[in-house]
Each structure stands twice: as C-alpha cells, then as structure tokens.
Image 1 (spheres, rainbow, N blue to C red):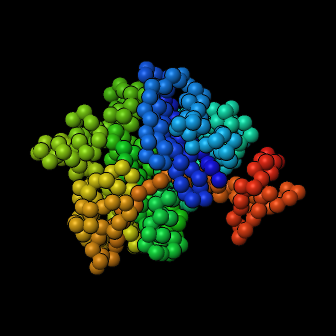
Image 2: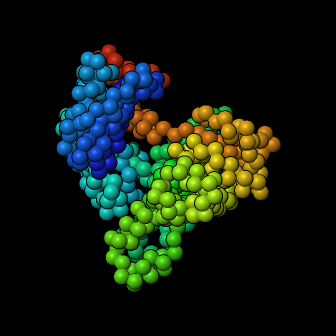
Image 3: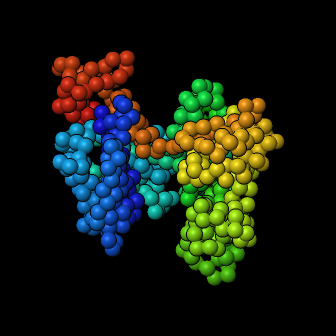
Length: 435
C-alpha cells in the first residue's frame, strides 16, 4: 500500500512516499520558501539520486502539484500514476484534548484543527493548508491526521494540569499538552524491539533533542509526563526557545513596556542556545565548537542545556518508579556524542555509566552504556514520517476489517492483514462509503 506523508509548514511542504507493507521509502523531499523569493525543490529517490532545482510556486497547491509531477516523471518518478497513492497521512501539531488518536479527515476534523490554531498559530494553519491542497489534488483519496499531541494524552491530571484556578482549564483549555508525540511513540516502540523487550513492561525516558527539544516519561507505552506544555515553549533549553522560565520574569518584561508579541518573539525566537551563547547561531555543533575554543558564553549555554536535560531525566526516573533506559533521538540526540557523554556522565547515581567507545562509534541504534549499568542509555534514530504512514495504514486497515470484501474477494483479509492489490477499485468503493 502506498501512503504519501505530508508535513506542511508556513513556507515549506515536506513529503515522503512509502510502500508501507515493506516500510520502504520510495521518494522524499521538500519545497522550501513557498511564496518567497527563489523557492527550491529538493527531491530524492530511494536509489540515492537527488534533484535540486528552482521551483516556480506561489502557494502549497503549486508545491504539491510540482511534487506530484516528479512522482510520475519518466526520469525521476516512482509511480506509474498518482492513482497508486491509497492514502495521505498528515502531520498536525495540535489536536488538543479532542484528538487522542489518528483521525480520518472530514469537515468536523478540519473544524477541530482550526479550533486549536490559537494554541499552535505557527503550525495548525499551514498543516490545514496542506490537507486542503491534497483534497484538491487527490480527490477521493482518504486523508488522515496524525497529531503531535495525541501520544501524550495518557498523562494523568497531576501531570497535565497547571496549579491555577480549575475554571481556567475548563474555560480556556489551559493545560499541558506535550509535543513531538509521534517521535516519542516511534522511538518507544523501536527501543522495545531493539532491546528484545515487550513495550508493556518497559519504563523509558525518551529524549527528542533537536532545534526543538522535549522529554517524556513512558511506562508500558503510555506517557506519564512530558516537558513541553500548552505550547512547545515549555521545558528544556532549545535552539531558540527558553524552555522553563519563571512567569514572574515574563510579567516583569511586560511591566517594563514590552508587548505580548515582543515577549513571544523574545522567548520563542531569540532565546535558548541562540540567546545564551551569543554567537549568532543556535546550531549545537557551533555551540560545542565555540565552547571547546574556550568561549565563556557558549560554554555556559552548553552547561545550561545539559543541566536542564539531566534534571528532567532524574525527575522522570522518579515519576516512572525507576527507568529501564534513557533514549536519545533527534538531530542532537542521534548525532552528538559530546552531548550524550555530558548528560550520561551526570547519571551515575542512577546506575547509568557511559561506554565511551560505544558512544563514539554510534551508527544507528546502539546501547552506549556499560554492561553492568542498571539504567541503559540507548541511541535510537527516529522516523516520524514512517510512524505517520503506519498509523494511516492502520486506520485504513480497521475500516477494511469491517468490510472484508464488496461483492467479490477483491479485498482479502488474512490474519487481520489486508490486500487490495487485485482490486483497487473495490478498495476505493469501501473507502468512499465506509471511511
């Protein structure tokens, strides 16, 4: 089954095309700077060929049309026809309390995505734009929304509520929602397989570390707590976001004459590693290089990043009643041996002891702690796009399971698996009527 995964940003459109039964990535890429000067297409095929070209696009419809043209292009294409795409999975950042699982997109779901745009103004509107572009370009093809917040909705009230009057939660939905849920879910499942353990028996602290950073306490595949809050601003020190801050400091800035928009820009775009290191970059590689050269402010930024992260790991170790593993993922978590060493070196009291050689030679999934460590540290590459494709397929499979065939066995069920290869028209009828 071929599933197209779409991640639409305000000025970008990322895509990945999967053959989900074999977890094979057929093509992926993105269109950048949509509606800006010099838009660009980056398109890569599974055989390693890469195309970069200027893109004449003014909106997400144009960008999607350009991508579709490449998918069926005689030289670059991986499809004979766009009709081979059976479903489209979309990353949607905020689903609030309404969406706790992937959802087939209809008018009601789109209304919900708009409803939560106030909580994710930079993400939900472009996510919805990508959905509506796909509805126009792929009429009749089912679209599925996979929400970043959904995986965290197992948190108990003690974790997700803020200590403010309860009626503010009831009236405005002020609470912790958490983000990066698709990544935390993927690495939780992948780590269980890698360790040869049942997910239901594992207690994991998953650390998604990139330009945006979050950490989650996952017990038996369910989140007990996570660091990001009502918005992605809360929690760890990030590339340009401050993470945890005394609300009184925010009020003080307002009293000094800063507007709400100015404070928003300060905390989301000018803080974190960028603001503390003061070298004009939020890239962890640049921060580490400057710190190693003896620069004081980058060293301070690095210390703050590691201190905050180690503190959260210790806290979540307690929340879980003792963790089995700390999992590093994301651009920093997967690729920075320096950060992993600095963090794990602080976890000896928890029984976590670094194997420096293993940490230095990481390529893909790996355990980087010594055999006698009671708390393992694991590096696990994330794949949010594959998770979205799998959840999209699973939702379709649940529909097919209710209607195993339509007049003839063109769609077959075998051990809860389904195969539509012999009669795609039959699958279309089922999805149009039942989905």
